Length: 406
Image 1 (tube, rainbow, N blue to C red):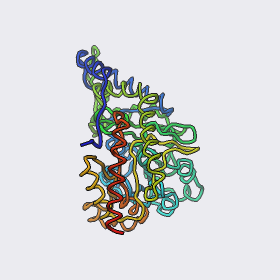
Image 2 (cartoon, rainbow, N blue to C red):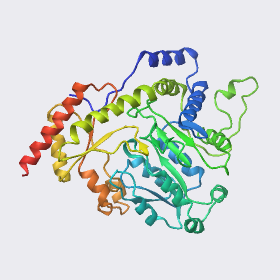
Image 3 (spheres, rainbow, N blue to C red):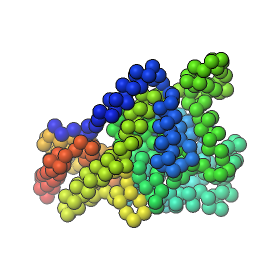
Image 4 (cartoon, rainbow, N blue to C red):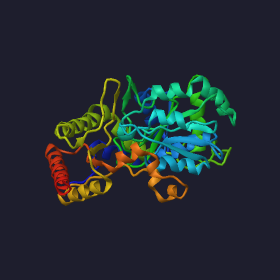
C-alpha cells in the first residue's frame, strides 16, 4: 500500500536530537529561542513564540484579545474542527461562512456576517494557499465597520477594530504579493504537527505582526508567561544563581514548546526553502500536468501572479459527482493499494456542531467542494513511480465509477 503520508528524516535530525539529549536540557531553552528567531527572520514578522500546537496558539491569542461570552468569531465552514473548537472553549460563538472556488473563505460572505458582536475574523489558508489578505485587512479598517466596533477591554480599545487571526496551519512558506505568510496580517498561527510541511512532531508558533500601536515584544513576553501557567520565569531562567523565586501573575496555560521539538524544527527550517518547498511544488506540478487535461478533473490553484501555496495538500475535485460517488471512488483507489484522504468534512457536519444548530447545507459552495474532493499523497519521499501509481489508481477508479453511472 502506498501510504497517504510518510515522515522523512535525515542524519542531521538524528544528530540534532542526540545533541539535545546529551545536553541535559530537554524542555524550553536555548534551541526553542533560536527557532523562534529564525522563524521570525524567515517570515518577516515582528516576533514569534513557539507553542505546543497551532490549536493552543489560536486559543492563547483569542484569550489575549479577551474573546468570550457574547462575542462572535467569523471562520470558514471548510476547515478542521480545531479552528472552531477554540472559539467554543472561550465561550464565544463561531460564525461560519461559505467558501470560494479556491476553498478559502468568501470575502462576500465574511462581509455579510459581520455584526457589532464580531471580535475576530479567522481566515484559514486551506491546503497552503494564502487567503486574500489585502481585502481582509482593508475590510476591517473600513470606516463603517470601525464605527460599529465595540471594545470590551483595553487591548480591543487599543486596536480599535476587528482582529485578523489567521489559521495558517497549512501555509508556512506560502507567499502573497511578495510577502511570506506570517507577515500578512495581525497574527498568524502555524502548525508543526507530524504531517505538516515543516514538522517538530507536534508543535506550533504564533507569528505576531500587530501594527505600531502595539509593542509586539511586550506581547511576546506576556505570551511566554501565559503559556507557562502564568509563571514569570521559565525553567531555564530559574537555573541561574539566586533566580529560583518566581511569581504567578495569572491562571495561565501549559502550552510551551520543548527544545527537543525545536531541535527538529531548526533542521527542518534549514532545508525548507531549497528542498522541502521545491520538492512539494514538483509533486503538485506532476499531478497537475497529468490531471489538467482530463475533463472530469478539477485541479487546485496553487500558484498565481500574486500568491503561491506552500503545497501542503493536493485537493483534487471530480466534476459532476455526488458525495456517495466520491466515497465509492475512494474505495476503488484503496483497492488499488493507494491511500488517499478527504480534507475536510465541514465543521457544521460534525455531531457537536449539528447539536448547536449548524447545517452543512447552509454553505453550498463549501459543501459542494467537500462532496467532490479527494486529497492525494504529498510528501518529500514520493517518487515519480509513486506518483504514476497514484495517478493511475485515481484515473482508473474515477472512470470505473463514471461508467457505472453512465
